[in-house]
Image: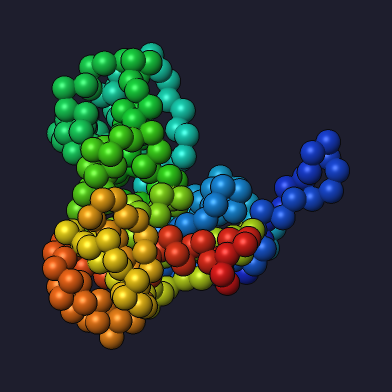
Length: 309
């Protein structure tokens, strides 16, 4: 099967409004193309239509209009679903099962035999950080542990395409780092990972490409390198041992000052060099010079109401 891992054209979806009054437009003509073998971030605020899109991709919802193809075949086909792993945003599992029993249950649904599961289940529990917790009932799992168990079930069938809805939900900083590392390892195996998120820092760390969804429409998509560029927007300069008189440092914006320590900001490279020369000439010590490029958060906020776009 060739072509993009995910290809969406003109996707529209509406729902009946409250008390059956009117229609709610969740998706308004979404167009999207996700290459194979990449980590693709599907970003947007709550209510933008991210989960609706993922449910259409996995066949849980039928679109009103538009076409969706996964791994070169129409979405919803049984053969196509066999090559996909999916983690919903808030997975529900039978809480009387243990973690290992849960994976065995889903494994049998995939048609995996007992011997295969004897190898896969312990390996997956270890992979997602649940080693030694497989015999614990799910009702005793924390939210983060349930998220890890859900990720393990999404990988049971060794999928070509992994679709994750808010995979960092409920995880502490260590857990988020471990899941990021796991997603990166999936890419090295040649898998495509398509995940929705509103945690922009995580997405910027690991994504090759992103799309931003606002109000049911894709307002920006492409590689991070293309979208963010490489130009420095400003420099933050931290100084120590500063004299009280600083009015001569024109062109620099004072961010904070505490005693003889200052944080200044300049936007032009020429102003940066002038500031450094003047600071040293005044007897101040340069603690750090931090360049700041455009971030994914900057891009995201520019498309929100009240942003710069």
